[in-house]
Amino acid sequence: MTVSVMVVDDHPMWREGVARDLQERGFEIVATAGDAASAVRIAKAVRPNVVLMDLNLGELSGVDATLMITSELPDTRVLVLSASGEHDDVLQAVKAGASGYLVKSASSEELVEAVTRTAAGDAVFTAGLAGLVLGEYRRMAAAPDDSEDKPQLTDRETEVLRLVAKGLTARQIANRLVISHRTVENHVQSTLRKLQLHNRVELARYAIEHGLDAEPEAEK
Image (cartoon, rainbow, N blue to C red; front, side, top):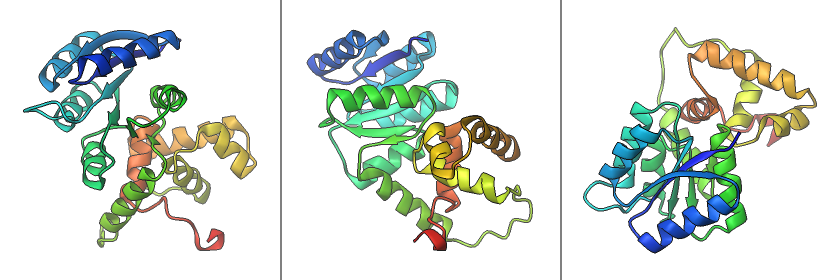
């Protein structure tokens, strides 16, 4: 199925260039926008699979737009494409609901792969940025949690969840654990039900927030 994409950037030449490149690669460009307010309004009208979001958009930022879009359109995923690789920018975007973060120095091939994987529900980050995000959420997760109502996951579900948080696809997880692709999907669906989540992006965020992405001692 063709992936529908909306491109948001305040620079017209860059915005149209990215839209044209993605269209030539087989994506359906359903809209473009040059500011956050327009992005939110148009996104609600066209409901794209993926919004490619810049951060520096004027009075309202791309982070603001990301929060509003992901809150109101749960089936639309936001992939940030920004010139900034600053730690705070990445964290704010992820906290607002972005599925991934790519810097503008990425190649066309990297962008195409990132949009494709984002549409499929994966969490995608430029190399090096994922570690920053994981490290920050590990620190946040270090705070004591006395909740007795935590969902109980099996060892295998936890193992699959940890690999989802690292950005591996279902097939890559199957290869890593030497199990079938269908078995991985069954574990993912079971974990989604237990945690009352909706997709792999939310799973990854849950794993990061609860420190489940950390390598087991035996693998270090």
